Length: 64
Ligand SMILES: [Zn+2]
Image 1 (cartoon, rainbow, N blue to C red):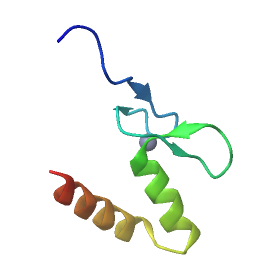
Image 2 (image 1 turned 45 degrees about the vertical axis):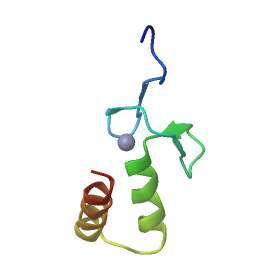
Image 3 (image 1 turned 90 degrees about the horizontal axis):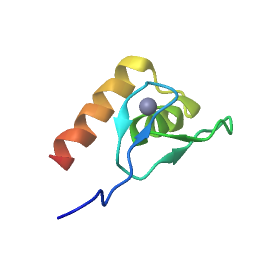
């Protein structure tokens, strides 16, 4: 295999480099990583930071 088949992006919110499909920031600041997209969505429905971490950890376990 030659060349990159996936484009790497850097998330402006957490600084992580990611290759997953980007999410759209609610404030319109552009593409963000899926984790931050999930966080923003959870935050918008009143989920606290601790619970956000738990949910994101659960998502990652299912992806692994
Ligand atoms: Zn991020």
